[in-house]
Amino acid sequence: MWVTRVIARHSTPRNDIGRSGADVARYLLQHARVPDVAVQKTDLGDHYDPEDRVVRLLPKHYEAQSLAAAVIAAHEVGHAIQDYENYRPLKQRTRIAKQAQQTQKLGFFVMLAAPIMLLLFKSPAILAIEFGAGILLIGITVIMHAYTLPVEFDASFKRALPLLRATNLIPANDFPAAREILWAAALTYVAAAAMSMLDVMRWLRVLRF
Image (cartoon, rainbow, N blue to C red; front, top):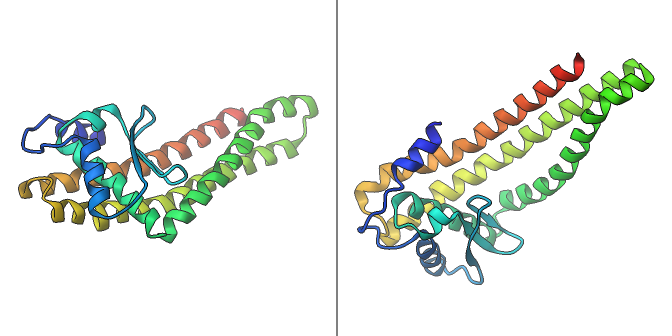
Protein backbone atom coordinates (compact mmCIF):
# COMPACT_ATOMS: atom_id res chain seq x y z
CA MET A 1 0.00 0.00 0.00
CA TRP A 2 1.34 3.44 -0.96
CA VAL A 3 0.67 4.95 2.49
CA THR A 4 2.68 2.23 4.24
CA ARG A 5 5.53 2.58 1.75
CA VAL A 6 5.74 6.35 2.23
CA ILE A 7 5.97 6.08 6.02
CA ALA A 8 8.41 3.15 5.85
CA ARG A 9 10.66 5.08 3.45
CA HIS A 10 11.07 7.86 6.01
CA SER A 11 11.35 5.65 9.10
CA THR A 12 15.12 5.15 8.89
CA PRO A 13 16.83 6.34 12.12
CA ARG A 14 18.70 9.61 11.58
CA ASN A 15 21.19 11.34 13.84
CA ASP A 16 20.35 14.76 12.42
CA ILE A 17 16.75 14.50 13.72
CA GLY A 18 18.17 14.19 17.23
CA ARG A 19 14.90 13.52 19.07
CA SER A 20 12.55 10.58 19.38
CA GLY A 21 8.92 11.00 18.39
CA ALA A 22 8.00 11.23 22.09
CA ASP A 23 10.59 13.97 22.66
CA VAL A 24 9.36 15.87 19.59
CA ALA A 25 5.79 15.71 20.88
CA ARG A 26 6.77 16.96 24.36
CA TYR A 27 8.93 19.74 22.93
CA LEU A 28 6.18 20.95 20.59
CA LEU A 29 3.55 20.86 23.33
CA GLN A 30 5.83 23.01 25.47
CA HIS A 31 6.62 25.35 22.56
CA ALA A 32 2.90 25.77 21.78
CA ARG A 33 2.18 26.29 25.50
CA VAL A 34 -0.37 23.51 25.65
CA PRO A 35 -0.49 22.40 29.31
CA ASP A 36 -1.39 19.08 30.92
CA VAL A 37 -1.07 16.83 27.88
CA ALA A 38 0.76 13.54 28.42
CA VAL A 39 2.70 11.58 25.80
CA GLN A 40 2.37 7.81 25.97
CA LYS A 41 3.26 4.67 24.05
CA THR A 42 0.41 2.59 22.58
CA ASP A 43 -0.23 -0.42 20.36
CA LEU A 44 -3.57 0.99 19.17
CA GLY A 45 -2.30 3.41 16.53
CA ASP A 46 -1.02 6.98 16.66
CA HIS A 47 -3.73 9.30 17.96
CA TYR A 48 -4.65 12.12 20.30
CA ASP A 49 -7.22 11.29 22.97
CA PRO A 50 -9.22 14.46 23.79
CA GLU A 51 -10.94 12.86 26.78
CA ASP A 52 -7.74 11.83 28.57
CA ARG A 53 -5.67 14.63 26.98
CA VAL A 54 -2.96 12.25 25.84
CA VAL A 55 -0.86 12.04 22.67
CA ARG A 56 -0.36 8.34 22.01
CA LEU A 57 2.27 7.01 19.60
CA LEU A 58 3.12 3.56 18.32
CA PRO A 59 6.38 2.20 19.80
CA LYS A 60 8.20 2.67 16.48
CA HIS A 61 7.22 6.37 16.44
CA TYR A 62 7.51 6.93 20.19
CA GLU A 63 11.09 5.66 20.37
CA ALA A 64 12.61 6.30 16.93
CA GLN A 65 14.64 9.31 15.81
CA SER A 66 13.29 9.36 12.27
CA LEU A 67 11.56 11.85 10.00
CA ALA A 68 8.35 9.81 10.05
CA ALA A 69 8.33 9.68 13.86
CA ALA A 70 8.89 13.43 14.16
CA VAL A 71 6.22 14.35 11.61
CA ILE A 72 3.61 11.95 13.00
CA ALA A 73 4.28 13.20 16.53
CA ALA A 74 3.84 16.79 15.29
CA HIS A 75 0.56 15.85 13.64
CA GLU A 76 -0.84 14.42 16.89
CA VAL A 77 0.32 17.53 18.75
CA GLY A 78 -1.66 19.47 16.14
CA HIS A 79 -4.78 17.73 17.43
CA ALA A 80 -3.82 18.57 21.03
CA ILE A 81 -3.55 22.23 20.01
CA GLN A 82 -6.97 22.03 18.32
CA ASP A 83 -8.40 20.68 21.55
CA TYR A 84 -6.71 23.36 23.68
CA GLU A 85 -8.02 26.10 21.36
CA ASN A 86 -11.53 24.58 21.37
CA TYR A 87 -11.38 24.01 17.62
CA ARG A 88 -15.04 23.36 16.88
CA PRO A 89 -14.71 20.72 14.12
CA LEU A 90 -12.62 18.53 16.45
CA LYS A 91 -15.27 18.77 19.17
CA GLN A 92 -17.99 17.91 16.64
CA ARG A 93 -16.01 14.96 15.29
CA THR A 94 -15.46 13.60 18.81
CA ARG A 95 -19.17 13.86 19.59
CA ILE A 96 -20.22 12.28 16.29
CA ALA A 97 -17.67 9.47 16.71
CA LYS A 98 -19.23 8.46 20.03
CA GLN A 99 -22.74 8.48 18.56
CA ALA A 100 -21.56 6.65 15.44
CA GLN A 101 -20.02 3.80 17.45
CA GLN A 102 -23.35 3.02 19.09
CA THR A 103 -25.31 3.36 15.85
CA GLN A 104 -22.85 1.16 13.95
CA LYS A 105 -23.15 -1.58 16.58
CA LEU A 106 -26.93 -1.50 16.22
CA GLY A 107 -26.71 -1.47 12.42
CA PHE A 108 -24.39 -4.47 12.27
CA PHE A 109 -26.59 -6.36 14.75
CA VAL A 110 -29.63 -5.74 12.54
CA MET A 111 -27.74 -6.94 9.45
CA LEU A 112 -26.52 -10.08 11.24
CA ALA A 113 -29.99 -10.85 12.57
CA ALA A 114 -31.72 -10.24 9.22
CA PRO A 115 -31.10 -13.71 7.67
CA ILE A 116 -32.43 -15.46 10.79
CA MET A 117 -35.48 -13.23 10.91
CA LEU A 118 -36.07 -13.80 7.19
CA LEU A 119 -35.99 -17.59 7.67
CA LEU A 120 -38.36 -17.40 10.63
CA PHE A 121 -40.91 -14.96 9.27
CA LYS A 122 -40.36 -15.04 5.47
CA SER A 123 -41.39 -11.41 5.26
CA PRO A 124 -40.21 -8.96 2.57
CA ALA A 125 -40.19 -6.32 5.31
CA ILE A 126 -37.07 -7.97 6.73
CA LEU A 127 -35.22 -7.24 3.49
CA ALA A 128 -36.29 -3.60 3.73
CA ILE A 129 -34.96 -3.41 7.30
CA GLU A 130 -31.70 -5.03 6.19
CA PHE A 131 -31.33 -2.56 3.32
CA GLY A 132 -32.10 0.35 5.65
CA ALA A 133 -29.44 -0.82 8.10
CA GLY A 134 -26.90 -1.01 5.27
CA ILE A 135 -27.72 2.50 4.09
CA LEU A 136 -27.47 3.74 7.69
CA LEU A 137 -24.00 2.24 8.10
CA ILE A 138 -22.79 3.73 4.82
CA GLY A 139 -24.25 7.11 5.78
CA ILE A 140 -22.54 7.10 9.17
CA THR A 141 -19.21 6.21 7.57
CA VAL A 142 -19.50 9.03 5.03
CA ILE A 143 -20.49 11.57 7.70
CA MET A 144 -17.66 10.49 10.01
CA HIS A 145 -15.03 10.87 7.31
CA ALA A 146 -16.55 14.11 6.03
CA TYR A 147 -15.83 15.52 9.49
CA THR A 148 -12.49 13.74 9.87
CA LEU A 149 -10.64 14.90 6.76
CA PRO A 150 -10.85 18.69 7.39
CA VAL A 151 -9.77 18.13 11.01
CA GLU A 152 -6.80 16.04 9.84
CA PHE A 153 -5.73 18.57 7.21
CA ASP A 154 -5.93 21.40 9.74
CA ALA A 155 -3.81 19.45 12.25
CA SER A 156 -1.26 18.60 9.56
CA PHE A 157 -0.87 21.66 7.38
CA LYS A 158 -2.04 24.55 9.57
CA ARG A 159 -0.48 23.36 12.81
CA ALA A 160 2.11 20.57 12.53
CA LEU A 161 4.10 21.91 9.55
CA PRO A 162 4.28 25.52 10.83
CA LEU A 163 5.37 24.21 14.24
CA LEU A 164 8.13 22.11 12.71
CA ARG A 165 9.30 25.13 10.69
CA ALA A 166 9.23 27.45 13.71
CA THR A 167 11.22 25.05 15.90
CA ASN A 168 13.71 23.78 13.27
CA LEU A 169 13.24 20.24 14.54
CA ILE A 170 13.71 18.82 11.06
CA PRO A 171 16.08 20.02 8.32
CA ALA A 172 14.61 22.47 5.81
CA ASN A 173 15.19 20.10 2.89
CA ASP A 174 12.96 17.50 4.59
CA PHE A 175 9.76 19.53 4.35
CA PRO A 176 8.66 18.11 0.97
CA ALA A 177 8.98 14.62 2.48
CA ALA A 178 7.14 15.79 5.61
CA ARG A 179 4.25 16.97 3.46
CA GLU A 180 4.22 13.61 1.69
CA ILE A 181 4.00 11.80 5.05
CA LEU A 182 1.11 14.00 6.16
CA TRP A 183 -0.74 13.47 2.88
CA ALA A 184 -0.24 9.72 3.24
CA ALA A 185 -1.63 9.82 6.78
CA ALA A 186 -4.70 11.78 5.64
CA LEU A 187 -5.36 9.35 2.80
CA THR A 188 -5.60 6.48 5.28
CA TYR A 189 -8.95 7.97 6.29
CA VAL A 190 -10.12 8.05 2.68
CA ALA A 191 -9.07 4.41 2.30
CA ALA A 192 -10.79 3.48 5.58
CA ALA A 193 -14.03 5.11 4.43
CA ALA A 194 -13.91 3.27 1.11
CA MET A 195 -13.20 -0.07 2.83
CA SER A 196 -16.07 0.46 5.28
CA MET A 197 -18.48 1.10 2.43
CA LEU A 198 -17.20 -1.95 0.55
CA ASP A 199 -17.68 -4.11 3.66
CA VAL A 200 -21.28 -2.99 4.00
CA MET A 201 -21.94 -3.57 0.30
CA ARG A 202 -20.50 -7.10 0.62
CA TRP A 203 -22.80 -7.80 3.55
CA LEU A 204 -25.80 -6.59 1.58
CA ARG A 205 -24.84 -8.83 -1.34
CA VAL A 206 -24.40 -11.87 0.92
CA LEU A 207 -27.62 -11.30 2.82
CA ARG A 208 -29.61 -10.78 -0.36
CA PHE A 209 -28.80 -14.32 -1.39
